[in-house]
Length: 420
Image (cartoon, helix red, strand yellow):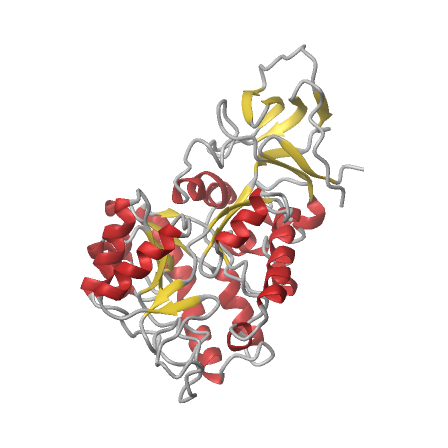
């Protein structure tokens, strides 16, 4: 791996002889060029000519596309031992997070939306260049009800503080509209870009059944209201069809996982303009390795049942016209090395170009940066990757993306260059 930042004395970089996909179109353009000036794209296309001084990069016919965006990432969880993570020394946890974020950029992910645990400390470290990682959107600790899916205490164990409250690395328990309002305001005080809540149970913890509704309507409405005041939104962990309907009724903007969504609900989601972010990698990994990951035995049965129905739910959403984002929901460096496999798994039910849109321009909409991220068009921020192979026909090129992604540009600066 080479880490570089040279864009020439003029601040202009010219990519030429590229097979260019802009993040939106159905097809790539052959023998195209892209002019990057400063942090933004100045020109892009087959008819671009630039004769000025520039750092010139011959793409040699390789595939040039927008940087990937992962809309469901966990930077602050070094393993599936969530209970152990809550007891990890903060300095050690930060070291793991640094490695996870650096690895994401290695694999061509120029933007990450954290789904719980990512915080202002990581954001400031990235902004200061202390972590060599991607653009970062974060919610702080995700919000769960006491005894909900995000409550990482073991059943029956004593509270560490003796106060009956829970605040771990990934999540915090809040109960009642007043606590919810205060917690959401605190998240935004600490710079959060969105709010994460739990609306259904999950598969990786043992306190809440999968189908159990979380929070009262009043509690969720408070979160949505406070996020709207900030021009932000709520993302909700939600597997069930009933939970997805509830999200729509209460104003939640993005449904995370959506594993059991039925066609009728999918139609409502499309009509409402909400988003669904499926996470196939996590379900596949847990089904195969639950015991080795140290997860409760109940997780294996739950996730296998959910997995059988997830592809059907994604297909129903795609047919209804729901805008589908893309996220991996993996934990720990050894598993995040397979982060790009999420695109291949989605290719089971969608065309490659639609999967690529999910990982670029649609995810840019989700993080509220449409037109600036996820596209190679004039005026957009210069986040680009050069890929070996043809992702429009074979998404497996991303399975080993630390090798097949040959170049990464973020904010107009070359951050990885593996062309030689």
